[in-house]
Image 1 (cartoon, protein in one colour):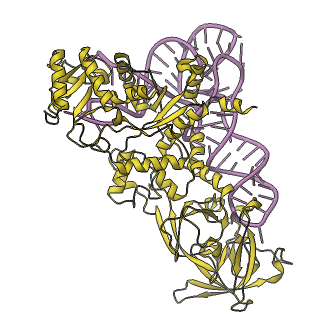
Image 2 (image 1 turned 180 degrees about the vertical axis):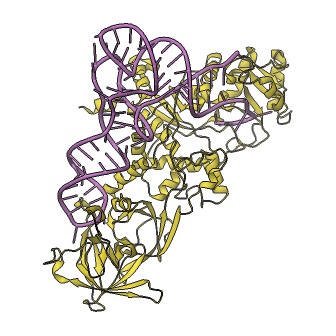
Image 3 (image 1 turned 90 degrees about the vertical axis):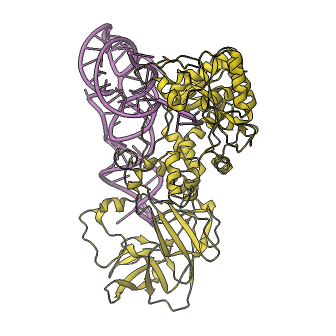
Length: 565
RNA sequence: AGGGGUAUAGCCAAGCGGUAAGGCAACGGGUUUUGAUCCCGUCAUGCGCAGGUUCAAAUCCUGCUACCCCUACCA
């Protein structure tokens, strides 16, 4: 199959539409999309889907994708959000066409088009208060009533609108509305507001304006100005499409973009509502927008997710018009797939148990060369030092082995009197267990078998393989064990109880006594590893020269843990 | 005088009148110095329900049902 063929296979209904358009020479076969975030919060995994769709579609059809900040509501927006959004898109690996666009840079044009509408008798200044307007609007079963201001003359409307612009009225005193149909079954067509008064300075335009266009009046026309051909948005805007088209029809716009809708992403065990994510930050349930438990792009990044894994995830879930809830397991599968092949291996003992190898002298070191990756020699080797004093994982030792009724129950770690392989090194046997006054195991006295370096032992079989570090040749680290943020699959689905009541108290468990093999020392933030048998981890920005801090991205698949349940 | 959408396995999702792809999960088995990876196998006589058209229906028609969105001077 040629590159072109594989590239041209439609993968979803939007691509199908685009291919038909290209075939019919619609827009002269050009494809221009846009990603239009409002800078009122950080981007989350749902936005990643939209980003992959818009940028990915442009890429696939040799088109371009613009980045446009849909900044028509200065009360909720800020430069901080703009910066974070730019950073997230860059990190995901996408490049927008030309300069970054702002809806606010079209405010002059939009104003002129509003005047155009007034001149054609298609818009009027309405003095109804928001409460009155609500009454006049009617409801789902009752048609609305015409505003008493609906038939003002063009001249009066022109004058009033100009005075709105010139700050002669207070907020809420009046607004500009499109004159469409107060009895339309689609509520969006009941003379929708298109400009409101907001005496608020804007993060881009400063104090130039005190009237701002409503989304519906700004979006389609901005698309037209930019020559967007396929304006892709989520399903809740479907009812707005007739209005989108109405403005395009009634205005002398330079192009006629078309809107297409797809269903937004829902992920279980988390939430994807900007407002609610902001609440988690504001209430300090999480540390920040980029807390590794947040489903934000910056949170996932700090957690250890890669751009590739997020793009792979978006490919996996597809693009449709049906509402579904994607299993978190799919996201985890995507990052495991990427990291399995790309992450170097290392050993980290998270909850240490002291092991003394009684047949090695104090002060003696033996260094082993271990592959950085079991299947990829190009990743090189690392050196791991063995000494008399070792540390192993507490859960890798049991005093008395359970009796196994089948192979799934077999104990494959260390037990009293038994042997186990130290990963990459010798087989050791546990001869004696030392306990404290409370009866807790605090140290194991073991002997190693010198004949088992790269060879199987003679006459006995180790239970399995465990990871380890030397007490003196390893480096200290703090391990942050992250888990899902909520205990309920649908934390937002209870009518009586808030999502805040379903927070997982164990979403973060901090371990401060952990030790990592020395090869990891000095690793830069965002370096990812597989700590063998423990999971995938990522160096956190909180790391210092004295102490590493690592975040658990995701566990390994664990058939043992599963069998224990 | 309500309107607009969506229903295919536990989850996501192909399918476009010719006899139900793929992925995730799950479950068996093999390899393994990671209980990982990898490999092999199993997993919808069935497509929300009921009728109808047709030689043939998940696909077309009719009627139901369930769920989602819409009555912001938010996007």
